Length: 84
Image 1: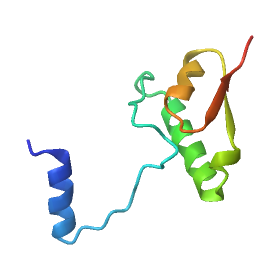
Image 2 (image 1 turned 90 degrees about the vertical axis):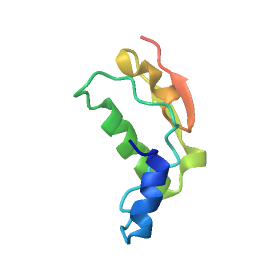
Image 3 (image 1 turned 180 degrees about the vertical axis):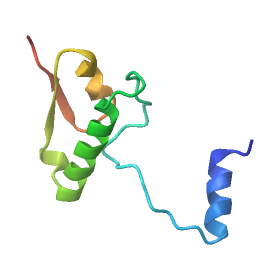
């Protein structure tokens, strides 16, 4: 299988248009949530809106208890963990 970056370059050279880019507000850490879980989608949507509004520097995320307590690993914003 071709290297992913080389494949992307090849597609763009053939005239393909890029229609999606990952927001800079997400880290490069792969989501570790269970398959079918909506946490990753929620993280992406929230971070896209924060970027679109231009409020990244003013945003503080709160990682709740439970499986999304690790949200700070995926978001490039200031984070704090909530207590019970």
